[in-house]
Amino acid sequence: VELNMISTDTATQSFQNASRLSAGRTVAITASLQLPGFTMTFDRDEEIFGEGESADFIYRVVLGAVRITRLLDDGRRLISDFYLPGDVFGLEMGETHGACAEAVTDCEVALVKRVAVERVAAQDHLAAGTLWSLTSQQLRSAQDHLVVLGRRSAAEKVGRFLLDMAGRSGGTVIHLPMSRADIADYLGLTIETVSRTMTQLERQGAITMKGCREIVLRTLASL
Amino acid sequence: VELNMISTDTATQSFQNASRLSAGRTVAITASLQLPGFTMTFDRDEEIFGEGESADFIYRVVLGAVRITRLLDDGRRLISDFYLPGDVFGLEMGETHGACAEAVTDCEVALVKRVAVERVAAQDHLAAGTLWSLTSQQLRSAQDHLVVLGRRSAAEKVGRFLLDMAGRSGGTVIHLPMSRADIADYLGLTIETVSRTMTQLERQGAITMKGCREIVLRTLASL
DNA sequence: CGTTTTTTTGAGAGCGGTCAATGATGGTGG
DNA sequence: CCACCATCATTGACCGCTCTCAAAAAAACG
Image 1 (tube, chains in turn purple, cyan, green, orange):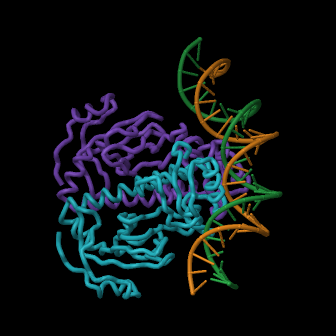
Image 2 (cartoon, rainbow over the protein chains, first blue to last red):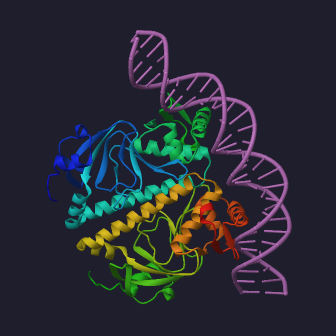
Image 3 (cartoon, rainbow over the protein chains, first blue to last red):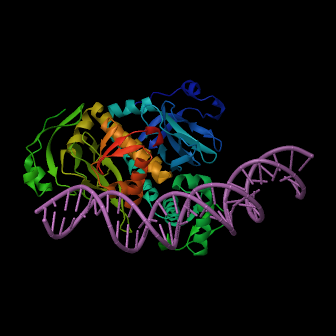
């Protein structure tokens, strides 16, 4: 693995707000793939990269949450994925990004230059395998999302979503970083239906809500 | 690129019906990635690989069409993708297949052993890049599918599907290899809704149908 | 040519979308 | 610290679209 430092200059060429930029350091894309990079912070709803922009970096969530959105021709919005701390994103693209990444909450993101990653992959076939594997995982995750979106009632969609979020946070107590609008655009429902379904699930005793973002799963079977 | 021949013996270990097997020959996964492999033919609705099976091969459609299906817990079926001649599939999996591949029509498929592909990728970083790129393309295709499935009316879903099929066959005259049931499970609709939507599109003048599988696009704007 | 499968068409009901109003939450400035 | 405002979430009433159930028509198959 080569160790060419990414200069902060290079980074500031791409990002106007250099004050949000940490000094260059080693960033772990995965445990087995560490590269020189840097970190940035983004405010809630701030754009991390836009649709059509050239894909110069690969990203890893350090703190907070990130959503991948696509704008449909009729003005609607679809969220194809949420990324939580530890998740890698920006791989799903070719030369230019096919979707837009935004901060769901204030968040911190680690970046490495794509060319640096590709340079390492060209020399280290283990690293190349890691990249392929990561992309493959995301493909499988997208197909899981398809299953949820495919058919199923609103209750099933919301239930699957909550189970998925619980799985990723490793327990039955969930803190949802995203708004109802985000959930709706992720599940192909309206805000109202998501809200109605949540209260319905609570009345059935399947979940308990402390505020609209703190959710405890009770009877997982009924989800 | 190494040239270890895949013995027909190895193949017959995995496939019972060895009569369907062609002799080993060079198979082009892409133009830039050619490997020793063989071809097989499958009857309509025959299983090419099953969910949970170990992913020993990578496939390329030579003739016919292939569908990737997942069975949902409630017995429903979701089709995540259709593959047409030239398309590569079997990449989206890890150690075991996460979905099932079936022949939509009688078809011919070229196979190469996954380990052979990985062996080449380990030595040839161009080949490794090709694999990453192919997987990445499929990820993007899955995300496009998400957009169609996400929301949209039945008319929009069917319209998008027809436009997509037209794009892949390179014209406005489409031959649909798959049944209404397949289309329904791909779009998250019922057979009846697909059928009704098609006749509705024809009445609007958007398409013309010669039988239920020969479709000509007329006014693309209204799709 | 008869049988089976697939597709089309019809009528009715349920679910989620739409529009609209109320209630909660969070951030800002006085 | 509290009042205010903006944003977000919840709830309600109504309508339209798609699913369901059912039957007829068309196509595929031997």
